[in-house]
Length: 535
Image (cartoon, rainbow, N blue to C red; front, side):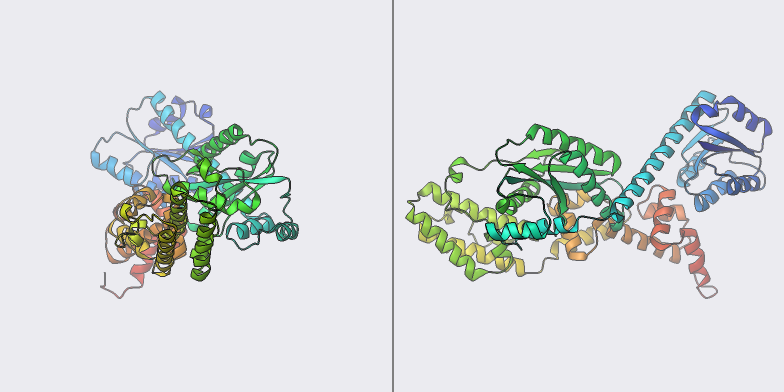
């Protein structure tokens, strides 16, 4: 139930509003009246008011003063101006104060009821959002299955041996209910493409944790498996599949679609799901990296479900071309071992009677390994190989010996590129943010700026700066606001607009949340710290 406060110096106007609308039908259990600003403030202090309908011109202070006071002290209270003044400056001031609407007298009661009803809907949505935060907090505080998540993290980062004996031993040690003799793995990558609300880094972590718990309920829902976040911040659903039973792909498709819709409604997040293929557990890393590449390459279709793209059948019949260990060797600067692997695989290809088609498949698999590694490092193919000419059509190796020479060269260049400073992309993003602090900055426009997938850009930025994109943008905007509050006499509403906030109430909330003090209080504190006469 809700409480309403009507503020107007005209008694008949107040009575008309109180009796003209069926407030109880909107969920109001109490309707309070005030005829001046001071009386209104006392009622708000004593009663839990949810909506205030206020006139503008009144004795002993105007409506703008009251709404500004409410925004400063009770930011969750919704406000509505009801006045006989149609002056644009009045309406503009109302917008700056973050009031929900501005109606002119005499007002039609049906119109008023409709407007207040819409305000009540927004209040209920805000309550649901707070409840979602509480649920996320509860999820975060609850005990996580640390051992299971650690096992899959180690497997995906190639820190575990995948020999049959060692794998079974490790599964037992980590308490993972997976039988490699009876089960296969089907990975599903959850790509967080965009947060539609501005969150702190802590809030994003809470949301991602809650999303993984919801994915357990909605996507697994009876299927054995788990959800994990790997060491690079990638969220995965891992389905344990019985070897002799077909995968219920249609069921997984529907569940992933429902999960994406749920995330948009309850977690303010646009996401996609990438469904992999069923593989033996020792090939999990290979399947996972294929999904990463699918995510990285996807620049056209977001907020959707993507199915694994099967490999070429002829390639599947060439077991000698298995380069699944190469990305880890490149990342770990194992140049000697890598050269041995190149020689070994090409010698086997030669012994097995490989032809030009097999050589072409080998060529593309080497490129795929390099693409995966550079993608994770935030490097582009053009940046690493653009001037060397090793990827030009004329440089394609025609013999086994030429292929070995080429493979050693390009993998060596990839290893060298990884060693180089990786802050160029982050620096470009930071410079763009600094130049556009007075605008609304979206992650999508930043990803387009540096030609990267939004989810990958976020992971790269956090990896390099230890700070999320949204947290950094909010921090820079707030630092600008502090500077303006301390060094100018501009109204707080104008400062909020300069910092890219169209809603003064939201600006005040965000400022107070970050610095534990309201903008007005910070300005007063800053001015009191200055010598007399210094502005």
